[in-house]
Amino acid sequence: MEQEKQIAVEQARNEEIRRQQHILEEQAAKIQLANTELQERNIQLDNANYQLSEQAAKIQLTNTELQERNIQLDNANYQLSEQAAKIQLTNTELQERNIELDNAYLQLSEQAAKIQLKNTELHETNIELNDANLKLEEAGKFKMKILGIASHDLKNPIAGINLSAEVLMRYEKLSPQSTKMMKNIMNSSKRMLDIVVNLMDVSARELGEIKLTHSSFDIVSLVEDISKEYLMRATEKKQMLEFESDGACTVLADEQCMRQIFDNLISNAIKYSPQEKRINISVMPSAKKVKVAIADQGLGLSTEDKALMFRDFQKLSSKPTGGESSTGLGLSVVKHLVELHGGKVWAESEGKGMGSTFFVELPL
Image (tube, rainbow, N blue to C red; front, side):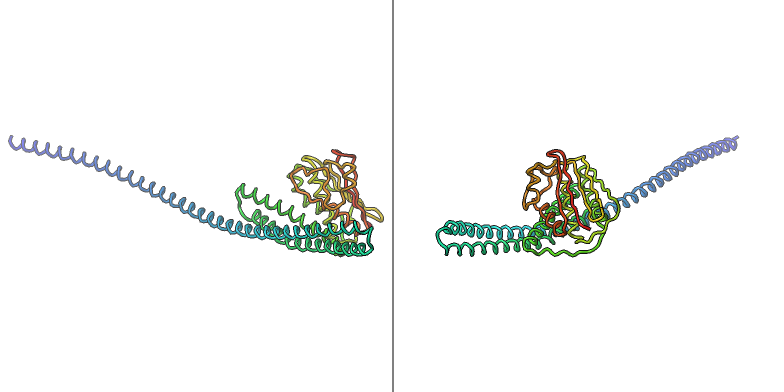
């Protein structure tokens, strides 16, 4: 009997041990599951940290590239500033020279007036007047020569500014504000370059230094190419620029002068036409001559405008419609270059607000 009790106690103990082992196994399984979940979370965290590290590396690379671009822009801006300073210095010198010439011209004018007053009284005074007039002519030639030299010295720096701005626009990724500034620089330098070229032409004309280099070329292709070059400017003003011709036409002329003539006339048509207007350019060859017409729907010409338009420094009643500038020299240069080729230029308009058509006729 006592032995049976011991066996029963031993069995109970074994049962309790097995129950405790089962509980420990369940707890171990839970701990193992928790460890597995922790390992998975650690792997996820490691992956997330790796992705964050990659993103940080990309951001660092982007910042480095931005810093390099900023350095390039700073260098370009510094160069532009230096060029602008040189142009400013040249402009100051030109203004000082003009003041000196104006003072000399004023003094000579006063002397000429005194000589003219005494001319009726003394024969000797008449000789002095002739001498003074000769000095005036020499001073005028000297002024034109100085003007030509100064304009020539300004041409290359201005062209350099325009080219630098164009390169930055084409090859650098600029902000919208920087792009707008670069466009303003390009437009301003283009206007300055046009003014300088006109001044150089006037100076060369007055000094008799314009020499033509004749060659044979297709004037239809030339005018069409110039029209294409102005398509962007016309588009900016929402204008329609149309070109038409009756076929090729070979002329014997100075190609550079022809380009300058039609560049000026097409530029004027865009400059003085309001937005959303049409500009028609046509080349009409015939047996012995070729006629080029540039017709716009712009501000038109008054009777007084027609009488004055081809004079030097003559600004007409119409004003540019897009804030552009005008020197009053372009048409006088056009007239002189056309006449050097044995041709003629004229304009037709039904009046103010009725548009105008400029014609250039050249011999074949």
